[in-house]
Length: 563
Image (spheres, rainbow, N blue to C red):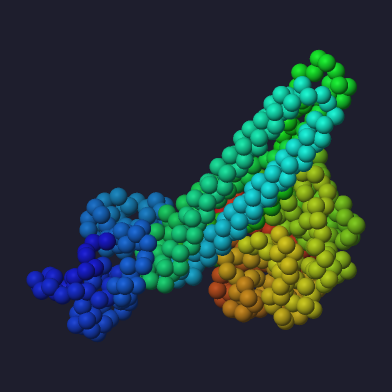
């Protein structure tokens, strides 16, 4: 912060001492009542927004200490360099960024930053981490209780055994009880230690959530943008801590039992021990909700529209999906591909290393498939199933089935929820953890409707009306795209990290890309590239690759290049 908020900056410059009552972030100084009035009507500053000093003080110190001017030249930031990921003043451009090509006006970069996908993603991630901490803490506390209960059971067994043997075994009894207590104490200390670590992390997360709320309400767009990078880094580190904690062997579920010495049973005179305390450790059943469709990467990027003409596709390889009637596909960041074969009732898994394909068979039809994390996938069951299947790729078997009681076609994962097309019931969502179901869009959908989620928006196709619709997560429509000259019978849908929408045109055997505002469009693939009644596609935003599948089983993988 360049100036003190206690005094009016304008008056102080005139050697007049007046307390400030408002703060202008763009001028980076406090204003008294008189100067605030002049500030609001002056041509140069009438567009500036001010907040009360009391409200401004509520912002976190990282915001208050963030300067909006270049520390090297004491000039206001005017340009953002995408190449070096930093704001620049006009002198910076001349001295160090004169060869950079990805320079953007800073006003374009910070515009609508508080409602950007990155801002929404961070809020969702913080909430996700907070919920995961609660789940882990509950599991640890339950483990403490179970250890105590098993300890009591073991102690009872030991004491009952003692009654069957002679008095000289009292000393051995004391030894084994001492070992039991020490074991309980040792294991409990480990759990208490992990709970203390969780408590610190939880406190940090709550503080980030409060900071985010205050930033959104009181900080300038530039301030929010500049500090958002640091918060994003810290949030990712917190998430890594949570992921590492669960995988740590110290988080294995601990129970106590007692293995009786055979000599005790035989009442032999050479008995040297009363038994042994056994610690059984097994993997915890904690379910971590983490939207590792990290296609919605938490990265603050310039919110400047990308010309559709700059999008070019290069064929990487053609693929045989080894299935018929392909209605769903998913492309993993490690190159793994999945295809759902509707009539064959199976999901085919193709690995990037060319190893033998795997498959997951189902008693129900398999319409669409979506990745939840590295090993867990979700499968919809189409018009007749009324269920959503969760399957493990490593074990190649069903983990659980949620009965949604409605037809379900296209599916998308976001923020711990599965969004799915429910035909005449519109769009719905089901919680991955507890299976609770919510309605999202009440307008009836046609069969074979596909959906995608990006940032805070839902995107879905309607084959009978030849439309693509964008709405918020509550179903409020933002725009509808319709151009029957290039897009007919739209089905599969996916988005890149710029928010461009890729849609399969089944009737014309093409793929159309639509701009984030729904106003511009371009055909980027056609039958010339091998498309023949394509059904689905999936864009992997980590690798910038597009997977497109024909209904007959032929598929194509493209590298997406932004020129």
